[in-house]
Length: 211
Image (cartoon, rainbow, N blue to C red):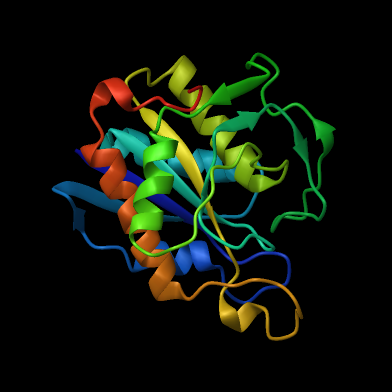
C-alpha cells in the first residue's frame, strides 16, 4: 500500500506550519505501507493541482492531507468536505474567495473513505487527544479535501482520501494566550497512529464516516 501524506506550508503570517513539519518527519513505512510525503502550497486551487500531479506520478492507494487548525486541542480527522470556499484571510497567493463554489459540477459535499472513528481511537491509544470533526472549515484545508474527493469521484475511483487537522505548535502560541498547542513529536506520533489505523482497519470498515 502507498499513502500520499500532504502538509501545507506556513500561512497567515506564521513562520512554520505543524502540518508541513510533521509530514517531513514521518517514517518511510508505517505498518508495511509506503509513506510518500508532500508539502503543498496554502493556496486555493493550486494545492490540489500539486496533489493531482503526485497522484498521477506515484499512484497512491490513499491520500491523507494534514492541516493546521489553530484553537483545536487535539488531532481531528475530518468526516466531510463541503463545496464552498470562503476565506477569512487571503491565501499565500493573495486569493480570498467569499462564498464561491469550489467545483461547479461537484456534489454539495463529499464524505471521506477513511476509517475516521478507528483513527480517533488509535490516536487516543497513543496517548494523544483526538476528536472526530464534522467541519473542515471553508479555507484551504476544506478546499483541498473537497478537490481531492472531486478527483476521486471523476478520475480516480479506487482512491481513498481524507483529512486530519492538528493544533498549533507551542512556539506558535507564545504570543497567543489561551490557545492550545501540541508538541511536534506528539503530532508525528498521532499521525503515525492514524495511518496505522488506515492500514490495519479491514477494507469493509474503511468508510465509517456515515456510521
